[in-house]
Length: 329
Image 1 (spheres, rainbow, N blue to C red):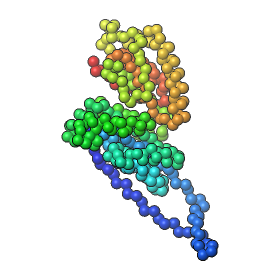
Image 2 (cartoon, rainbow, N blue to C red):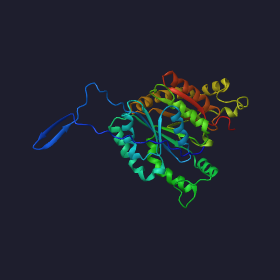
Image 3 (cartoon, rainbow, N blue to C red):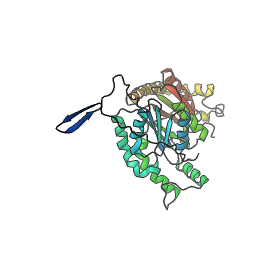
Image 4 (cartoon, one colour):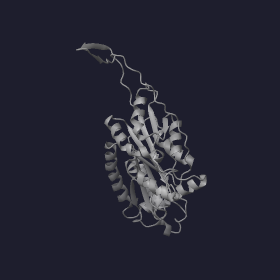
């Protein structure tokens, strides 16, 4: 997956000078007031998505996906101009109802203005979401080397130096992100599928959850909000007749949930997630990734992820199940 620097033009509309409706003279000074005609509808504030993340992680692909879904996309807009872009959209009489802005280190001299712009948007009650594209150092180095391009922050150093500098620069923004997508093992089509799953719906659900099984021996998922460890349960790997199968197999699932503590964990963790989900909704967080791990990501974590996802779906949470490491052995 590589970054493409296509940048849709976003020309600022000229501001028409309003003519004074009433004018009076007071001691030779002219005083004018603008009167809004009665019945004039209020400008609709556009929905806003800010796309950011690591260079080479797929920002352009994510932006193109939103563009295909009908969003007005602006690439590499200086953060200080984001409120202006929203105001222009509000004056478009509904023609620009959804705006996506790509913010990255190519505009690093403007990057310090981002927090001020976000505070301005919050004060104006603008609905905004931050999508952060993440990837491992190894994947990023491989992508930059494949296109023979330098990292925008590497200067006279190596690609890994630029990546490290960018991670530090984006650390705070990543913590504020509503949705983090790890593209380390995704191709372009898989990333587009993830974006479609989050933004293609006609109506925005209250909360979307991704339940991901994984193997600890392959590393923690970097985009996980919550992590649970299933290694307290006996491993079906050591049962010869179950070893070839996965947690999607009925016999493996039955073995896992017949172990002491398995059903109790499912019940109590589902109850805990109800509490957390209510808090996420109050705070306006719309996406959560729940990672369920075991040693190899093949048996216990897969079986538990399937059951947990079914519980969440039954409670009205739109849920997607991903088995990250199943099939790697």
